[in-house]
Length: 330
Image (cartoon, rainbow, N blue to C red):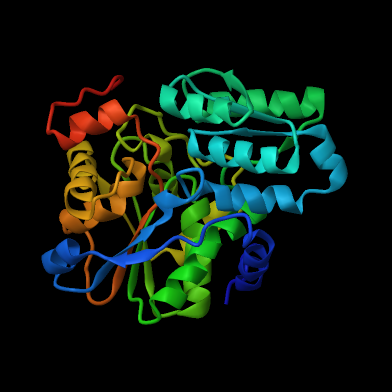
């Protein structure tokens, strides 16, 4: 059996480390999706996490794991929005200086949310890779400690605590649908779920526009993709050509990856609001989208992880009202 860089024991240790700093989010049954699929479907409401997304778990675990001298130098990370928010919150709780680097594609509401938590903001270029260049410069020239958004054992272990909660709250779990971008969330959840319940399936869900992990899996190695605007903006960005952790874990642990069109993502956001009474951003709604579009085989108890709520509310209003949505770029 392949040994991965993040084990079930690592995830259990992370839970003990962060338990008093994060919310154990509820798992609730969805009557509408259960009826639509003919199987019990539940929603993991991680969008109700303190910072509005799951990213707080990994960032909190990473900060808590840092040596005192690293904390004294301050931390820096690249983000499409939610990691930056989690990192800023965790750093403020520890009294640590925090810089978040983002591209110009990150929505203004996410930038403002990070700034409100006390982090310094750097807007660089038009891709996650451009933002990472600035992170690398700050590490080299100012000695800051990098806390990456996904490709780091402490980040993966922190996100994996969701998987422990899923198996405890749904012990007969058959299928988990997880938003997939850089892979920290999916790798952590898959390691936890399969460590506790090996027969369960874990499927990653991403968007058709610029899904870097999907392209990398198809190529057999980390590869570059063009980052373009999408309703699932938090799933944008590359996985890093030097990816060490999430790519092999996703390759080995995920049972499948499915992709959604922009129309299917919009339908998922609308469903979450109209039928579940939940405000969910595009990236957080893709599990619902995969079920509505019948892109996964549902055989038994199923969970869709709703990973975040940090959507621009005017955009949300337009989507749930059925107004046409125009995205920039290609």
